[in-house]
Length: 181
View 1: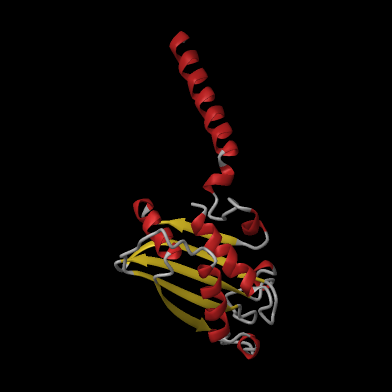
View 2: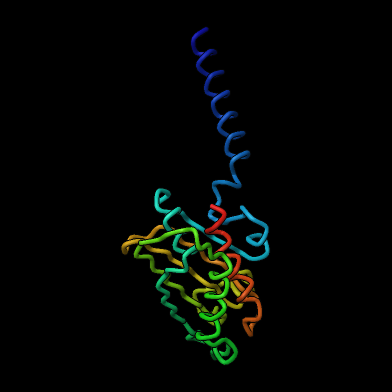
């Protein structure tokens, strides 16, 4: 009977300890990113896939030696309007200016770095979107940085303006997120 009491006490202590640990680390376990201030302005998800390659990515930003691929995805179930206001060439120009602001002539990069970027228009009439929350944002921008064709870092950040007026701000946040890793 004495041993049963000890075992039950240990189980209760373990469960309470686990509960406390999960509460304290709940923020870090979330897929949503909140590391820097700009990530709190819009829903942001980020993922580091290869920590050992992050410095190579940063050096590619410093040396402005990134191949850029931009893709778009228009709404299918509702009338697409976003790309009447948002031009891919303008987004590319803005992104290159943001990258150039990090330029550091003393850095050297010999990496084969590619940035695949998707500008996604939120399709609010998509039958798969059932909650009001899924219809609040105008779209999102998704970045996938690859070194030698291997994904290293991904970030997705929402934009809210239906005409894409806040896209430049989100581009800046995505690059800043990488550079602050």
